[in-house]
Image (cartoon, rainbow, N blue to C red; front, top):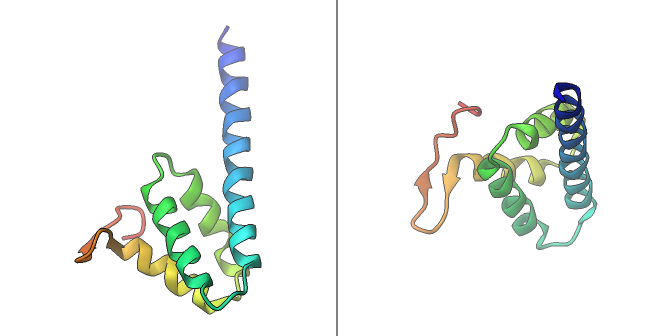
Length: 95
């Protein structure tokens, strides 16, 4: 029984990692002039994620990301919370 639970946890974790990795790849592929909005929205989703899988995936990929706009908007989303007027988020993992 415990083995089944452990196997389920491992497969769920792997699929969550692939999901966030896919979202990062999809966002980085967008080179449109308004892509910064998508980057910021993805950053908000990562900051609001219930578990740490999203943030861990981002932290693992961070050194390989060359898109400065992408990084800027993700950091902005980690720092600010919506709706306007912006409130400081103070995300515990990012601090």
